View 1 (cartoon, rainbow, N blue to C red):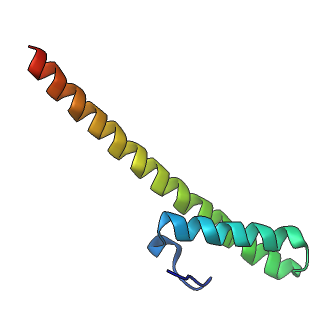
View 2 (view 1 turned 180 degrees about the horizontal axis):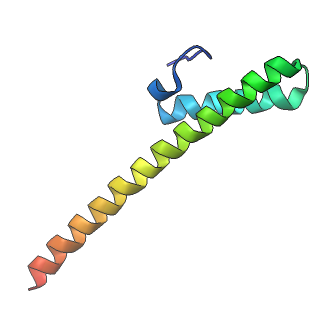
Length: 79
């Protein structure tokens, strides 16, 4: 899925948000943007970083739940 800066951040997959964040950082580091463009890039980058964090926290919660379920079934089998 190719994304554009107009794609709402909350609709992006982890991979799309991460890839766009990399592009935003590269553009900011290049130093060619005006102050207004830099601020817009920073705001977009911050939103993208937050989106990536949401995905990672969700994945961690799913892993924790799966581990807990696996542990509970192991404990029940041993009892």
